[in-house]
Amino acid sequence: MSKSKFFPDQLVPIALTLITFLGVTSLVYLEILLLNHFVVSREKIILQIRWGDVLVGTTIYLKTSIDFAIFIGRLMEKYPGWKNRVMIEIGTALGNAVGTMAILILWDLFREIPLLMAAMIILAALVLFRLAEDGLEHVKDEQGKWHISFGGLEFLIEKFLNKFNRAVAPVLNILTPHLSVKDGPQKGFKALFIMSFTVPFILGLDDFAGYIPLFNIVNVYGFAIGVFLGHMILNLALFISPRTTTNWVKNPIISFLGSLAFIGLGLWGLFEALKLLGLLPY
Image 1: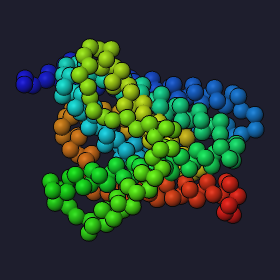
Image 2 (image 1 turned 30 degrees about the vertical axis):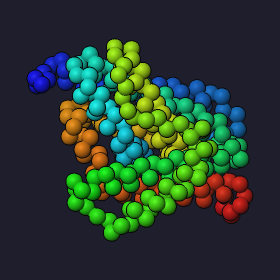
Image 3 (image 1 turned 90 degrees about the vertical axis):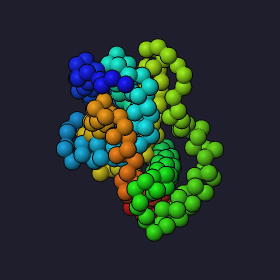
Image 4 (image 1 turned 90 degrees about the horizontal axis):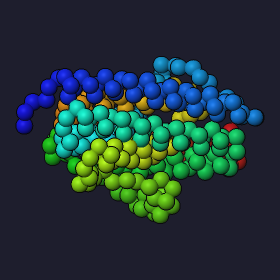
């Protein structure tokens, strides 16, 4: 295979990635303005960028992006050329943004109704537990290559999560369908755009729903910008080297620590939901 030219194969998609980041950030800004316009009793969402919130959003997004990186990396190898990369960039960025904005609307509408907010937080916790199991599967898959062991703790945690997630799967799969990242035989720019849009949209729904327990301590606007920034960073890395980036995000240490963080966030979310329902004191 001939080596890709820096222009236009690399430079055009990279420039578009930066432009798209600014575009989706502007969209979420306008969305929050619209939501704040219809505020009656709930507090308005603060349109303030705090870099700590941006950093939290970026860090967590990059941890949850393993499936996305694998999927997009495979697409880039299967559909080379800058025109295909432009379709992949636009589709993935819009998919991630639309999924994120959809959950943001639901959160804003439900947060003044304790029962509905508690239900949404419980759903978020279930999503986090599923993400934690996915991360542990990557730890297991990479052990032989990286020669890293966690003393069997990863297998015990995965076994428990697997039983729990299988028990709640009938409900969770209906509410947040988990889309496979397998790419099909579709051809053409339209098919490539739809494929690039769909997977990040579902992952954006799942991931941002799982972040809801954090919204009590971070600013939603800055956090969303961090998510979009993480998406931009990941896409830039994938454009430069899809194979290297895919291998890096599957590092077992990152996957294991991230899974533990998801479990902690999920348990915290359940605790907050019980307080909203009046089953635990504030």
